[in-house]
Structure formats: structure tokens, C-alpha cells
Length: 162
Image (cartoon, rainbow, N blue to C red):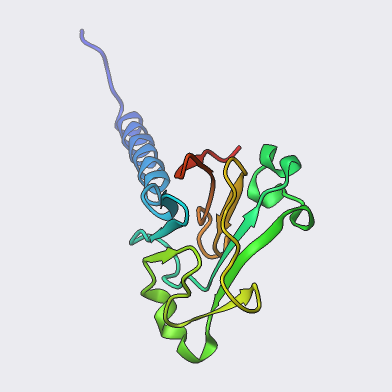
């Protein structure tokens, strides 16, 4: 007599397979979304959204020189008071619909629909070679809206988050 399978055992196996598939899909839904850096000095930041992101807006971008103590911890564990913000732009409330169309930001160039808060006047400082920087958006809206990077020999190198 061959192996015996019960209907309830088969149903349970199918349900476990479906659950595993759903978990795998949900983990990969945000794989292509987030904030990415490229180029040289000044760098460019790309905002990529997934169809599964909860919101479309990208209301702010902050570029900070990362304090060495914060290089070893994730963005939510940083002591932000130790970092030095070199550039901060926010969506202009009078043009809020433009922040959902934002796909790229070049460092130092304020995109349409945004205002610069830091520095208050003029262009932001040139980024220094071999210093760790962090660019981030609103992490509460897009959890992977953060990237760490250095400028080395005039080129951007991104670094993984701890």
C-alpha cells in the first residue's frame, strides 16, 4: 500500500506554501524603491517608488555629514544632534502636488515645488572627500528613503546601512 495523505494535511501544506509565497512577495515589493545616490561631486539622488509604497509624496530631503559615532548604527538609532545638516529642502505647502512627481534631486539645486531651509541663503557647501554623508527623506513615509555615501576621487560610493 502506498503513502496515505489526508485532505487536511494537503490543505495545510498548500496553505503553508501560500503563506510563504505571500511573505516572499511582500519582502520584495519594496526592493526597488527608496533613495539612491549616484554621480560625482555634487551627487544626484534618485527617488524610486514601488507600486506597493503606501504614499507617493516625497516631502523633504536632508543631506547630513554623519558623525563617526553614527556610522555604526542604523538611521533610527542615530543621535541626530551629532550630525551636521549641510542641505535641507522641503515641499512648498503652496505647491504640494509637485512632491509626488519628484524623481531626482541634484545636490544644491532646489527642484520646483520645494524650498531650501538649510542653508537659509545661497548654495550649500561643497561635499568633502572621504567624509561619510547621509541623505534621507521622511522615513515614516518610505522606510528605505535613506542612503549613506562618500565622495572619493570625485565619485560617489554608497555604503550599506548597518
